[in-house]
Length: 262
Image (cartoon, rainbow, N blue to C red; front, side, top):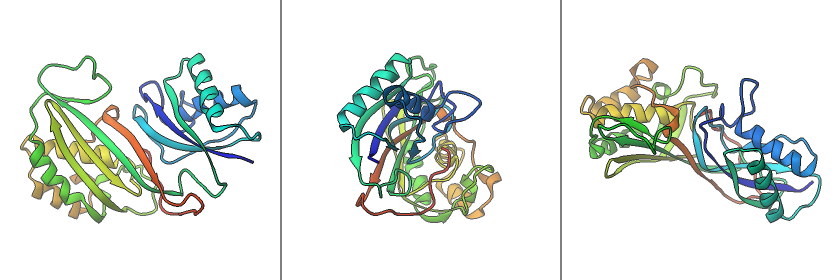
């Protein structure tokens, strides 16, 4: 049975998240319906990571097993056509045939996320539900310094949701950076896997540093406390973007802790 790797872009605003649920429309459900319209098959997609309600994606990855051996380009074009006809805010950026050993979740070696903040007094119009609006100017250099306290292998109990279902809170953050271009502040993070609400927890905490209410040392101490009560406010979901997934040799299957809902 041919396996296809799909790279998916979506506006998360109208969806309850990636994962198919009973309480509203999901991105997974939209793609599965489009595949059914194309092939007549009902399949279950497996994704590299689950995104929460309102979270967007530029490079989500999932895989699909189809009965017929379609050309990859045909799969992408046909699924997109059905997504457009259904009025979905989801696009297949690329389709690629991969070995059956490839798994969108377990073969992933690194995931990349972006959190966007618009720091200005005036409300947002174009960026509404695309970035977190903060009325005060933010010191992005202090935020970047504080973010380095989170790099490395740590127990991230402070920065994970109380509803997180991961087996343990230990993760290795390979890279976290904070940059500013005009009024736009961007937080980028890369790791093999993340905990539920981890990036949004980082963003809300680093905002306190940018406002001068916390110091980088306060972030270090909050991390060391391993106490959810020591976390800053959780940033809203609509500023978060799933940017990309890295894979090693697609013929090998790497098993590790997978992403929780972000």
